[in-house]
Length: 510
Image (cartoon, rainbow, N blue to C red):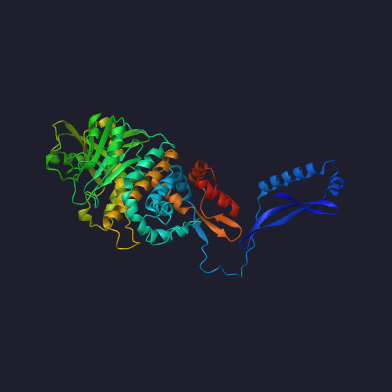
């Protein structure tokens, strides 16, 4: 609310007015007529009418701020307007905040200027990334998916295809600039690196993570290039600049190369090598012990429990046990590969009820006796079993993010090559994984990525025309924490139109 006056022959007549939004237009209405200065002094027994008006306005604004009651007139006989969207997702705003902190809008602006692109590259890439996090299996095109947000971007359906070749060519540049910008918002421990190599995936890939599991650099390879010897120029430049003391490889048993010797020059070479369950002749004598249902271990709240019989897991608290990974670590001599130096190794076998349930869906019981089991060979010592299990979990999450979540870009022309589509898609996955894990790190690591994405996906509001937005999600401790980090709130009983515009602006602040 604010003060307004009209000047007449008698003097100035004062009013308290406020702005309102009606029928798609901004206008104002009178809240209270105060009268002329002499009337105010006489009626309110004051000497200074202007001072009283200012104090009265302050009290009214404080009262309105305290009450904030909004009366919304609905007509039970009126139909909603055809084709007018009523519900919107606002969970993406918490991802958008990180996007702008990483200055990805400026990076996209530089690329757009270089290629003189007529469309909004930042809008396209950001929406592709948000879609990959929130709705990875959606059949909606990126352009249609954008309509689910209260703020619209300026690009067309066909512009997404036009952007793919550009994103493919500029993948290294974007990764490099993001790495430089990320240091503005957090510290990255880079003395210990994790190198994940997936040569057997549909698109062979190498991915390097820092100690906090945030992606540093990525390279993808043609399907006929199963054992690349080097990473991209940017990845090599990055590795040369880092004080690497240790690197842990996570790869398949048939992988015999390393993408860059710099990964191992500064420290011992450690690996966690995935092997087929019960599929390695050299260690056949250990399989009977490994698959015995007795003698398993599990880490719960930082403490290791031993002597567990996995046949009885479902008899107790199945839900809790389903989220746990049980393991055995068995010493072996060598692993039968070309890299075997004769030093002792560990055969680590894990078992998970959740994995067992997922693998048994649609299978015959006769083929399911090894469901839920996974095996690796590692040269990490047994007292670092938490690192081995974390690396295993990380490898599977990455495979899921880049594999199961893989959605080909359906929109666009046949002029875009498959290689360009693939590189653009993996760039989207790389950025999506980075943004999501930065948010997870900011939240303190107390919730899973699945919990975060599920919460953001459900954060929707219903728009009341010319009035505002009503939250249509459940407020939780996680939503409270998200709001604390973002510096704005979307969980008031109603968010006025003006307040929503302010929230959108805040989500784009650097």
